Amino acid sequence: MQRVLVTGGNRGLGLEFVRQLLARGDRVYAACRHPGRTLALTELAGAYPGHLVVLPLEVDKERSIAELARETAALTDALDVLINNAGMLVSGERFGTLAAKSLSETFSANVIGPVLVTQALAPLLEKSGGGKVLNITSILGSITDTEAFGTPSYAISKAALNMATRQLALELGPRGVTVVCAHPGWVKTDMGGAGATLSPQASIAGLLRVLDAIKPTAAGTFVDYRGHKLPW
Image (cartoon, rainbow, N blue to C red):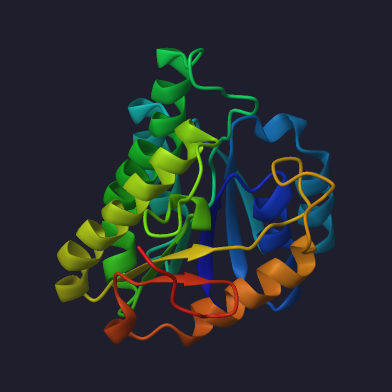
């Protein structure tokens, strides 16, 4: 049984991570903005007694991140896995009408949040004797593969998250914590939209296989849900 913390665990990919992790017997800490409003997580907690704890987290607030670390440390002496899944996408952005607020808020949620959450939980990950961090990124953050202007706040932030992954991997690798980033595919969620080609179930099953197979030598890599390396 692994001890896994998932940010943004109340919906979309995060909720599917929680479902599949619980189904295979792991102990899950699901962090989200409003724990009291998450009916799906409440039902899962009832279905898997003693295996799911729902914790509050505003990923763009330092105080909330610090409180998450304190609460998690009170519940467990170590974490085996951190999945930085929480994020945001501003739809309908067009050049000429870009707003500083959209860029700033997206960067805060998609880059600053994962970096600070990883920093805050690093002591617990180190205590596991082989901790792993999985940053959920996107192929839209690939500089090499970008051929058109689109979703700029999201794409720019995911490119930055990829760099953050490399930085964190170099810092935490010597401490026994392996950090990678993974593209989940184009998934049928509120963010991905109805036209997406992949189900949440298939995406997360693939990402968990990737996660389980991660070795320290893979630190700092950028892969997709099938484990294929992607261009930076």
